[in-house]
Each structure stands twice: as structure tokens, then as C-alpha cells.
Image (cartoon, rainbow, N blue to C red):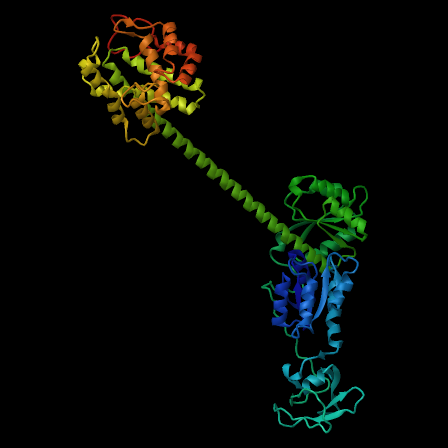
Length: 620
């Protein structure tokens, strides 16, 4: 394993995975950064030997980050290699101009990349160490350092100086270009600073050197120590073979038997089982959604790999299966054809085991993530369907309960109305039903919605509920009521409103308004509040017309006040006086429908003499 530490700065997760896998297999230790800012921070903290810097980064790009690192005295010595997917003309020159020592293009060539990184790492040991800061601001030099790096160039006042071991390991030579070297002697006391005694005065920064035990000229290399891998990545050896690999199902499609067997054997060493197929048609016949990856030969007789790939991608159930094209061709047009057909990746023959290892592991990881996501989506959809069905069932139950409650309330309201009207005779119950229907017909003719029309149908039926509080002798008097009796009778509007007030039900609140206002007049001469015009609630104005029409045209005590035609004329006469003109127009517009309901309730027919008391309605 190399002792060089590498920092990878790359924002693309797939590229990061590929680069770090290749570095790991090659034995490098590394750290990872997804942004330029994070890379600068890790470089200052860890001082890596080499930085692989992506040029295209979000926010601050790689060139700017390189420039910042090269201007920082602490990090300027770090070697930086540029990575980019564009390779546009001038990119390499710009990378070198800001301080990069090299340039690698993407997509990463898995076979050449580890070698290139190794060459960059080895070149670091051959490069001279240039220090342009006073030595006192750097770690103290030791003779051990001098043995490992026998020549160090110092910069002071823009003048190069050379510090080197001189024969005896206890001597150092400090020399300036074109000047006589000055020999320095190290003191013998270990770990103590030495004082430099220079015969000729030279304006240079003071140097402190620490005497340490002299090491042999050819030091014995220490045993290799495995470097920890930063970024919380799983430590792997040279093989990706795991228990999880054995569950992956791979198909190898190649017309050459030797190639099939070699690729299958290589996959077995990596921990993968594969099924071998000799042609495109056979692959299409055997393929099902249980396969996790297809390694497909590009050049095959009959149906080639590109055509097989197109056929596979035509079926949506196979869209998530990764396809790796395996071929001896390496031209750009061939790669484009494969990608356009739906291939996910490309491996050149002869197949490199490391490249196969990295690409298969990466694509299978992507496939597992997609499968997990689809499974989660199916579970989520099933949960949504189940919850939706439960909610729909619960809402239906609530709706049925509400409808049952509404019907019960309407039934109770109708029975209250029957009770009030029944005091006037057995046919009076038909009056409340007729008023409800007439009111609904008029509301629809005015353009009110279905809810308002239905509200009027039921709320209008208790318009005279206040009669329950009036004496029978006054309510049922056949002749004219005197002034006192009329004043008492008119109280039924207020009493009915009080009886219905205070309820949270919209139906009862509407009924309260109708009970209070159905005897008001458009000209303000009505009762009990003498309201005028639009001051009268709309529902009250509608019921006033419906109530008056039924009173005029139905039999009361064996008498009928007006015929339908006479009633129609009277409505016109009272328009703008007793009634709202707009509502009168709507009633006349729907007059035929009102008369049809009148016929159904038999309100224009004289009731028989022997009508039983139990007959409370003539509706048919």
C-alpha cells in the first residue's frame, strides 16, 4: 500500500465512487470532499500529498480552489492534478497556469487511472522542496531529514541557498550561488539547538537545527502500515466478493464460448454467479425481470449487441436492468451507438479484472437502490390505496349517518308543521307541503342553486309553527277577526321565530327567518317588523308568494277565493306592493310547474264531506 495520502474533490457521486474504488484497490489512502470549500478545508487540516481536483464544481470551481491553495503558504507545496469531463481546448493550459502538475480527463479510464495516479505520486519524491518562508516558521530540520532529502533549497530575500549534508553527518553546508560555501557543525548534545558561527556576515534568517541520532545512509523501510480510509467508507480488499453478491443474477451474452467461460470465471472470482447465453435471440427468450445485470457482447452474428439492447429497452419491465456492453471496439461512434441503444456502461476486451470489479459493483449497487425504491413505492402505493379505501368507507358511513340525521330532522320538522296546520282542519297539512314545493319551484326559476332550493322546500313548511301558541278560537275563527284578535294572530310570526331560534342547524336558522318574515310586504306595510324591499330576507319574500298563492287558490271552509288565472292577475297587481317584482316574475315564469304541483296536491279540488281526520295530505 502506498504511503501517499490523496484528497479527492468531486461533486458527482458516481465519479467519486469510481475514483475512490480505484484508489482503494490500488492501495492508496484518501479523503473525499464534495465541494471546493470542503476540499480547501481538508487540505489545510490534513496536508495530503496529492489532490485530485474536479474542475467543474458547484459554486467555487476547481481552478479557483487550486489558485487559493497555491497562494496559501501552508498548502502551496501540495501537488494538484486536474480532473474534468470536458477537455475543451485551453483547459489544460489554464489548469497548469494556476498550479496543477497534471491533467486527467473524464470519463475515467479504469485501467490507466491507477497507473497515472501512481506516476504522479512517485514524481512527488523527485521534486525539489522549495521553502520561501523563514525556517523558524517550519518544523525543525534534523539530520534524519537530511539523509532522506540530502539537498534542500531555501529562499531568503529572493536568493536561493542550499543546505546539504557534508561528508561527516555532523556537518552541514550553507551555500549561496557563486559564493564560498559556509560549513556548519552540529552540536553533539541531542535535542538541543545549535548556534551558528559564520565567519563572514550574511543577512539570512536564523537557523535552528536539532541534533538527532544519525541514521544509516540506506534506511531500512518500516513495515507497511495500512492507512485508515476517511469518509466512513467500507474497507475492502482486492475482491468485492460478499454474501450479498451471490444473490445477484447476471447474464453473460457472447457468441464465443471461450470468451463466455473466461468472463464467467472472472465473475466467480468476484463472488458473482452468471448464466451463459450464446446469442441475442436466446438472451431475449430467457430474459425476465429477475436478472440484476446483463453483460452483452457488441459484435455477434445475426442480432448484434446493439439490437439486443434496443429490444430489451423496448419493454418497460426491463428498464432498470443494467446492461454492460463488452467489446474489442473502442471507437467513439461505437460507444455512442451502445449508449443510444440503452447500455449503461462499456468494457473493452480483453477484460481487466479490476475494471470489471468496479463497474459491476457500482451498477449492482445502483440496481439495488432502484429495486429498494420501487419496493418502497409499491408499499407506499398499497398503503395509500388501503388508507384511501378506509377513508372512503368511513366517509360513506359519515355521509349515510348525516343523511339519516337529516331525514330524521326533516321528518321531525314536517310533523311539527302538521301539528300546527292540523288545527285548521284535516286538509291543512297539504298546505305546508304545497308551500314547500311552490317555494322550491320559484327558487329554481330565480337561478338559485340546488342546495338553496332544497333548503326552501323543507324550511318553508314550518312558516306557521307559531300558531301552536295562539288560541284555537282565534286561529280557527271562520269570520273576520276583530282588531284584538288580529293583533294576537299576528304574534304567531314572532312566536314561531322564537321557537326555532338558537339552533346550530342551517335548516332551522333558515326556518326561523322564514317564520319571522313571510308576512312582511315589499312596500313596508307588512308585519311583524314592517320591513321594506330588500330588508326582507330573500327566503321570506319567496315563501310569501308561495303561501299567498296557495291561500288564494285552495279550498278553505268549502270556499275558494280565486281561480288560477285570477291568482295570476293578482300576483301581477301586487308586484312592487306586497311582493318583490323579481320574485313575481320568476313565479309567473314557472307558473305552469306551480299549477302542476297544485294538481298533484289536489289543492284546487273541493274536499269531500266525509274526509277522515287521519287524511292529512292529498298528495298523490
